[in-house]
Amino acid sequence: MQTSTPPNGRRAGLAGVFEIAARRRALALLPFMFVITAAAALAFFLPGLWTGKAVILVDRQQIPEAFVRPTVNSDIDSQLHSISQEIMSRPRLLKIIDDHKLYPDLRTTRSTDELVERMRKDIRIEFQSDTDRNKRTTRDGKTIAFTIAYTANHPQVAMDVTNRLAALFVEENLRYRERQAVGTSEFLEAQLTEVRARLQNQERRIAEYKEKNLGELPEQREGNLRTLERLQQQLQIAYESNRRAQERTQLITRSLAEIDPGSGAVGGAGAGGPVVTAAEAAAARLNLLRQELAQAEVAYGPRYPDLIALKEQIRNLEKKLATEKAAAARIAATAPPGKKERELRVIPQNPYIQSMMAQLDQANVDTKATSEEIAGLNRQIAVYQRRMENTPKREQELALITRDYETTRELFRSLLGKRGEADIAADLEQRHKGESFRIIEPAALPDRPAGPNRLRLLLLGTALAAGAGVLAVVIAEQVDTSYRTVEEIRAAAPVPVLSTIPRIVTESDRARSMQHRRLATAAAAVGLLLVVGSSFAVARNNYALVGLLSQSDTLAAKR
Image 1 (cartoon, helix red, strand yellow):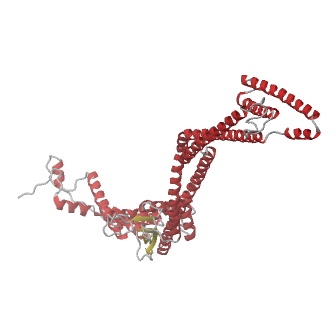
Image 2: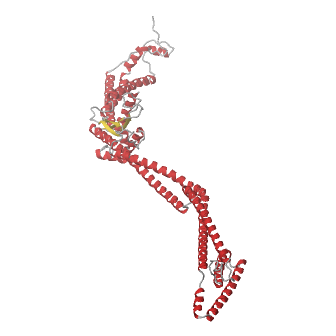
Image 3: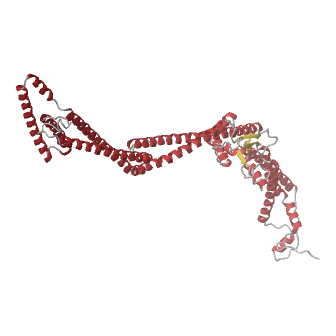
């Protein structure tokens, strides 16, 4: 029974693999040693990174919001983001770097911006959310705890810097909330001052408008109406009084006109009437005409036709009175002494005439007074009627002015209440009774490095080394075209093989082979030393590579 061979004459299956491995073991061992040495050197020389971690709890407001409403209502995630940006700012991180003397090897070769960026990469903040059941969260999904981690090349430095960052978060949160609360209070105070000034200006405008239009305002309508009714009643009374005074004047005037100046008496002595002389009657008549003239001039003007007739009558009476006085004087001069004295005593006006003239004067005074009262009442009535007519217009104008005033007053009251609430909220934040951060787990001294994972690196290096050895053998087999067995020749050439000649090894061949092995061993040793040196140069203080490897491990663990 014969075994089948491949077309190229080489053995297939595991036997062929083992034969190739046995023949190429030196070639496979060389890249394997180089790669595994490089991986081991890197795992050994890479510096260790230590991570400190602190847990901060978000404490809710201690006083219920039903009593004090906070003015800082921003979402906790956005608030943490703002505080993180503040703490991660360049001045803050530079101060931490200087205080803790971080990155001493990089200070001479890197700029401050690069140092800050390096520290930002070393800081990790994780907000705990409701996606993880093991995290502390509220029912509504709001974050109530978060962790701060910092990675350094020394455990003490990692712990100190982490606690420093956690304290900064607590302090910055207090300042952030206090700044927002005080800023809200100051903003409301500024708005309140502005609205107060606008309100005072509007009140001054309304006061000036009311003072300017006093008596025509809508709220004075009822008072003006009652006053107008009272004035109309007074006007009716004044008209009635004036009518009665005019009637008395006419009655007295007719009584004086009925006196007969030619008879020398009215009623006669025998009849019991008053004795009136012609001179007294003329004087009374003259006095009456003069009063009528004065009233007519005031009422009608100097060119009224009746005034001319009155003036003519007055001139005639003045002439007649002068004649009567001259006649009385002559009679008195020719009369006996006793009679002279008696006649001279009769010349004064008669008491009846005097009484009638006094009544006439009083009637004229009453007429004039009531006329003036009527004129005054008419003027007052006109004033109040004008006020009543202008009241709708003033009401419309006042409505336009007071409309903005009412809006401003409501805004002022609202701002006043909000400013009071903001002041209470600001005092709450200043007393640290509002929402705050509390460190519940400060960073402790790490007991094991966070990276790199040296065992994982060795395993990875071993896998890469085995792959490099296999790859070297495969490439060598593909490149090598020599024949090693009779089957390979028979498969390649159609002619028969008559015989084979074994390899003849002489002493010189053995010596030369031994020399080649020694040289190869020395070259491999030198190469391994170079690999170790290169790995040391690459791994020494290469925290960036450690961070990259640690990040890869973290991603692999998450997956």
